[in-house]
Length: 271
Image (cartoon, rainbow, N blue to C red; front, side, top):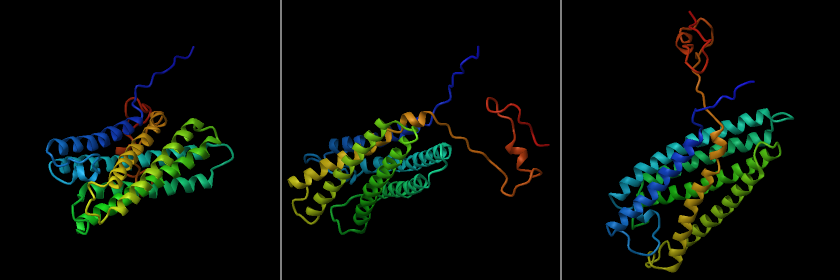
């Protein structure tokens, strides 16, 4: 009887957990520090207001920049996963799914860029200041590109359910989160637009409503990321080094064919 081999190698789902943990800490810790220092005192502050001063601003910038970097890693993992599944489905590779997968890369990179801009350019009281304008632009890019990525991946998930590659409940969850995220971001932008030049910006009920939906949209990103955990846990990533200009006699092969225990013990040096 063949023995079942137990795999102790960690799956790529660990990257999802790391992303969620760091993103959550960046939001909660910056809020806690700002609150304890008396930098925010009104009910339901905007996320930007909890990071507009130091030391909370510096903490948020460091952690959120890390989040932006890990975002790119998650995007790459999902891209290669969908590409792999698309090549293995019956009936040949779907061009529509390939286009969705490529489009999601564009939205994903845009979201990571927006997160980096938000982290490094702090919100200021004067919205006409150059730094404040860049912060606003970054927030718009973050929410719009992030929502675009969620929608492209939701549609891609629906396409994959036709091949029984992903379960329909996962598609339903992602669809609901995408709808809530889009609605929350839209309400947030509308409220921000209505109070942009208002002297009661930090006290109006419209601003408070906008802040509530901003926080809701932020948590939606975390929930959406968690929906990939189970899928990513079944994956591992291998990076292969090959000579730039092919040829078995290349000196690069001497270093790319060193046997690694547990991977392939039959590989020997090329010499």
